[in-house]
Image 1 (tube, rainbow, N blue to C red):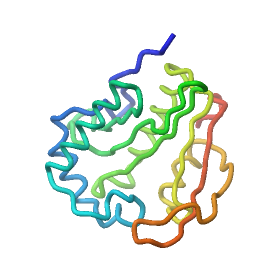
Image 2 (cartoon, helix red, strand yellow; image 1 turned 90 degrees about the vertical axis):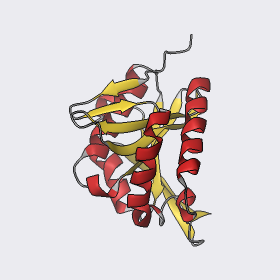
Image 3 (cartoon, one colour; image 1 turned 180 degrees about the horizontal axis):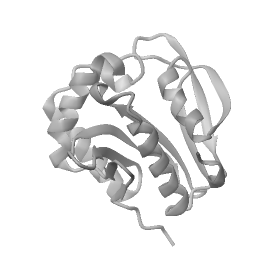
Length: 187
């Protein structure tokens, strides 16, 4: 039996919910605000995005959420409703089940613990409600801010894939693979 996919979960300061077309304008603003920080790490950030591109991305995310192919979530501040983080459960293998968590935080909200709090909530949901056997977080070997999240949460560094892809600027890059297979070790 397939588990019910939660459309939203909450943490102490966050409402974490599936994509909605109403989010498009705020995602566009967050992306534009954060572009300088995104370009080194996110391949999609190397081209200029328009509001229409953002809306199309949200439409695709909604469709993939419905088909259970990819579960994108947006972290909103519980009190203000402001969009803080785009994240989700990606590269899903329902036969295990296995999920990969990805994330980026809008520049003005970095360093406030929102990513850690939200990733913890997504990890709890993946194990507790979706029956995860494994949750991974992958990040560029040079992206220490991103690597700090799984380390803080008790994920194990399983290895580094050397020169496995190229950065958005075309340089060879290496990827850290963190994983959690025992929910009781989540910090």
